[in-house]
Length: 202
Length: 202
DNA sequence: TAGCATTGTGGCACTGAGTGTCAAATGGCT
DNA sequence: AGCCATTTGACACTCAGTGCCACAATGCTA
Image (cartoon, rainbow over all chains, first blue to last red; front, side, top):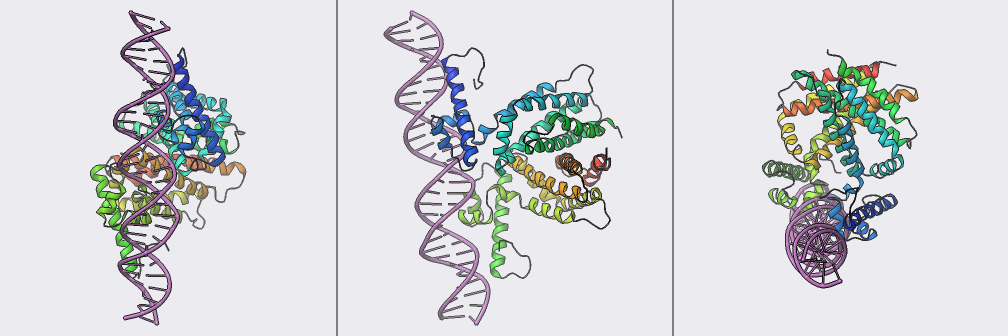
């Protein structure tokens, strides 16, 4: 099992969780202090009291230490996108995105700290965009749900692309403001503007 | 000078251009045959009759061999975005994007071949998204031009994000169709749908 | 609680990307 | 030909990432 279970794990499971947390904590501390590229995996491993080899058992790459949260967010998005009965696809998407944004807000400080590291490195920024792409795929699928016709699916994909593109800007500005802006409100506003892309048949 | 001048260069300049072309050609041939990750820089250098060290003099990373065209496209976009007299910002953006798409079409085969390589590798895909981001920055600047007020700039950025997100989908579907779809027509269509984001003041 | 199977860990050696350095080769010019 | 500037190739190095194997810790059972 690669999963870190939250419930009833023995000494073994606890140690694993602690090791992972130690690595994450050490890495973020070092990244914040000296920047991502200037920190080597050896240093992180040393600071976390594990061997270099063990580091790579927990995280496939050095970058992955930073993106654990995003994985969780994406999973949450996928679940929130499950269609509710008698709900239009766009409404589902809207509801799901707002709910995920709220999760974002709940961990504000952590999210902001991570973004601060990511924003300084082009490699990390590129990696970050991959999550947008995954979100796009989920949204496209959700929007296309129930729509028939060759053109409808294409429209759904274009709308999903536009939504992700617009929301990334909203999130980015929220981060730049230090979390002071109204993330959910501005997200809703942007979504309303884009609603036309889906509702208008012609 | 790092530029490869096209006009009146001596033997030196010609050799440089030829070396760069040899590397590019060898790399793309190997990538197409065996996939990006399975090809080492040593192999490319060997196939191109240069030393490994020289390879890195021409291309900062292995990935960069593939993205030369995109750099040129971005430069073309920036030039096309220069504001024309008495032209609304959105019209400028529209005109610029269409003109760049036409360039795309002119080198159809090359573009498709590159995308075929990129699409198979997550790392390359991530790297590819960086160009979208750069295009976004250019579009946001162009759209914000002449608009005053704190909110107008934000709207411009959101619109730019949506445009890039939507157009990426259009381009992607064009690539997936093997270049058979109407890239320019569908791009225009998507832009028209998004025009509301800019024109509507409320 | 002693013993055994399972599983995680650390060390070692390896490949591959990317960089600094320097001597040798090559093109440009007179 | 001969001098100067630039480019090249070779070598050595760092760092990310991986396969392998011996060893240690844990969990389970008698």
